[in-house]
Image 1 (cartoon, rainbow, N blue to C red):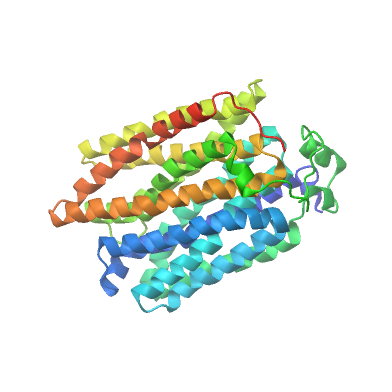
Image 2 (cartoon, rainbow, N blue to C red):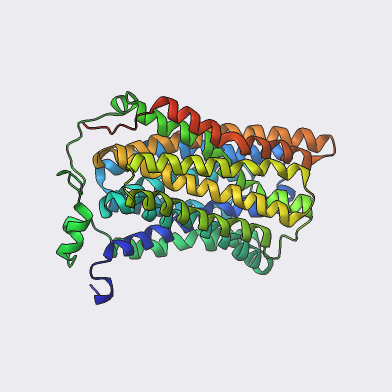
Length: 430
């Protein structure tokens, strides 16, 4: 192991998770960037596109539930490997399809494969980091969602202009196969990692109360048992009500800026770059805030919940977008909302590792992720219906104004329900 990494190898792991998450979001965002071209080539209306997005979300929801349990059973290393190989091939498959139905199948396959990313990544963070560093580590790798979202508006237009939309799908999909090579040779759980310094291993395992970091083969819990805990429902509700907002930012913002402000698809989309760059700051800052509060002596769950309330309030100003015509002011409002979502996300993911034993982490993340994806199935239908109605009336921008109002208050509602479900912040032991 290079001297550079001695005592700090856990940050190499976060770097791997960061790049995997970046690739994950580049692959899923390509279709949103190419929507105006694809809807002409394949004669889609707003509802056709909505159904394709719903197909992705449906398979993503099922995959999260299955992959979470699957990764808890076979381990982080192999589970993550299977996930990224599957989704990379599915992303490349988009380049070969010739019909709307084919796009639907390719999106469903992509959703199924991509569903393994977060259960595996959160479990890897839990294995490699002590409690006080987990939110920061989660925020760092979760910022890959934003870097991927920033890279896509810069990369895809260049490929589109030079080689066409099929090459865009193929090139972005191939990146995951490159990542797999590094993952397979660099990752192992700490207790089995050759060359890991004893001091770092001791630091990682502090506060675990004897709980092992490796993937125990003994499973004394079930999905039914997990659903019996209020803490599972806290995560479930939080993801169900807020994940769809991020899906909206991801899949519809390119269309919003292109249609409302007449941006050129074959040039870098700077409004999107600004929005998704801001989300990187939110992701890391959100993880840092709760870690800072814990360092000041706060209880971990109290620190997460307080941080999440702050970020929920920061989303509210996006409703004002309906009253503003200046594009850059709107970019600022959406940037604040999207950054706050990622700060919220870094903390809600980390609450799982605060509350549940390591052997159940991927399963609970999968359940919550499934809830978020289920919300993501319903919300595209709402979005596409609203947009189509306003489009038919000759005012598509008005439809986006209604959607921004929904986005503004989703987090406050989610936080209140989560607090009512579990006001005392108790951990689960079994």
